[in-house]
Length: 58
Image (cartoon, rainbow, N blue to C red; front, side, top):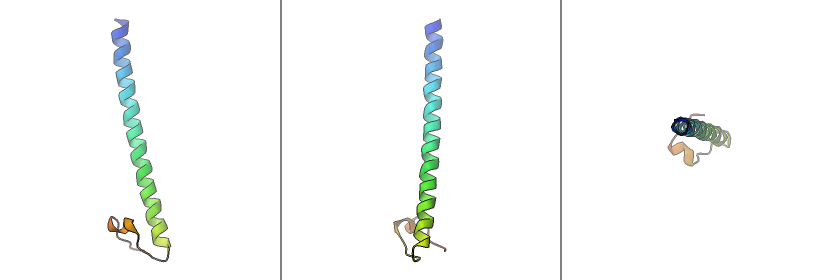
C-alpha cells in the first residue's frame, strides 16, 4: 500500500516539475526574444533576423 502511494506521489511530483520547467523555459525564451527585439531596434534601426518574425516598428 505504501509503495503504491509513494509511486503515485512520485509520478505527480515529476509531472509537476516538468510542467514548471516547461513554463519557465517558455518564459525565458519569450523574454530573450523581447530583449533581442529591442536590442535590434535600438541598433541603428537595422533589421535583424528577428524582424522577419516581429517587424520592427521603432
